[in-house]
Image (cartoon, rainbow, N blue to C red):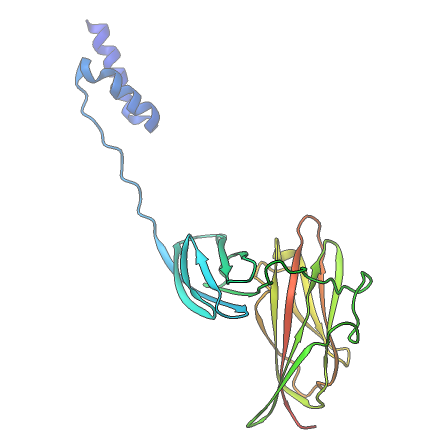
Length: 271
């Protein structure tokens, strides 16, 4: 009898051991010794934080889906609750849906509490993206349809918007796409909108080159999503007219992507 009680006591001491063993011990000695049941500690409540979310699409009006629910239609700005993180920000998947266009899925991670997405939707049953890469059947500014240019007269001068076409982003390759600005003016402000996707942003280096050969670095091996709006510093006083080049380099193997399109935005004054 004493040995039986001693054995039961040893089982009860398993309460100090890992949960899997502790519950096994209680099940064995419950009838023999009547050890008090120890409730498992409640799960710690998840802490959440709010991030800012921006989404736009070309064309507008696409539904944005996150975790199975619709957030709204583009252009969209809202706040999203996500589990609080202490080190590397987590990645989240979003879908863009619009009747007559292919569904686009994008995975993104917050940067400084913000996720900003921009997609160029492709028509359903389309021919896909035409490769305009230099040295790969690429197009020069005079080949194929011209880039679309929109000029608006503002109170302080001109606003010039030029839409460029896209290209495939391939491993260990440099791709070049071009647009041509036809208006002769002097730049006061400049921005660039990039639309596309890539499996691993740190692979990329993206540079804009103006008609005079000056370069503006948009992205270099950063974890941030480069497919967004960029405000370009250092362009004030440059001439707008001529051919502008966007150079996209993927400097590592294993991940590729697509530049769906891009937009050059220029605020100008008369020369």
